Structure formats: C-alpha cells, structure tokens
Image: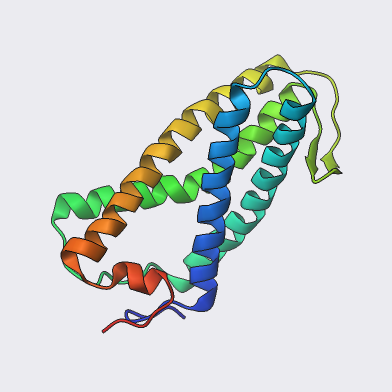
Length: 179
C-alpha cells in the first residue's frame, strides 16, 4: 500500500508506463494526422491504435489500483485553488487514459475499420456508422487537446514541486522514499 513517504513499485510502474505510452501515442497521433494517405500512414495508425488499446487495459487496472489504494497524501500544503486545480488535472488525466482509447475505438468502428492490437483483431471491421465515426472523431480530437494541456500542467507542477517547493513529490513518484 502506498504510504506518505513512499509509493509502491506497482503505483510507480503504472504511472510511468501510462505516462510514456500516452505521451508517445499523442505524439504519434499528431504526426500521423499530417501524413498523406498511404502505407506508412496506415501502418502508423495501426501502431497508434495498438498502443491505445494497451493503454486502456493498463489504465483500467490503474483505476482499480487507485480506488483500492486511495489517493496519496500531500507532502506539503498548497493553496486551496491549487488543490482544486490538482484534483481537476488528475481527474482529466485518469479519465483521459480511459476515454481517449475508447473514443479512438468508437472512431475506428464508426468508420468500418477493425480494432486490432499488433495485428490481432479484437473487433472486426464492418459497416460504417456515421454517428459513431463523427462522435469518436470529435471526442478523440478534443480529448487530445485536453490531455496535452493537462499533461503540460502536470509536468509544470512536478517541476515546481521539485525545484521550488522541494518537498519530495517527484522523488516519491520515482519510487524513492522521502521524509
């Protein structure tokens, strides 16, 4: 169980696995968006979708882990407005790790494409459903922008805790014990 002074290896691993996968997937998605139609684009979209499905699985496990393990205690006091912003950003990040993959799957299904993980088809492609396609695409596009903003705020807050507050918050997220 996480403690005030140290997070479990599971908490740390889940955080960094999802962080790397989500940031990588966002970067890949933005890159692929501007590519012309062709083999390279479709191959990279397949990779993007595969990573997204894996993020969904790990994020779902992380949600269960977080519910069972409760939220960690703060290492230093913050202003009430900062506490509210922190709560909102954490909720956006947690929800985004679930909703971004789901909206991507909705978009694929709506456009008649299969949902696959590295070539293993999980949901077969079929008839197009314009409503699902439009909903998925809108949610995915808006979600990407919201996630980028939330990640940026999260990183800035981490740097602030490390360089200005010096309370050990970042060290704890790296798996180290803090006072």
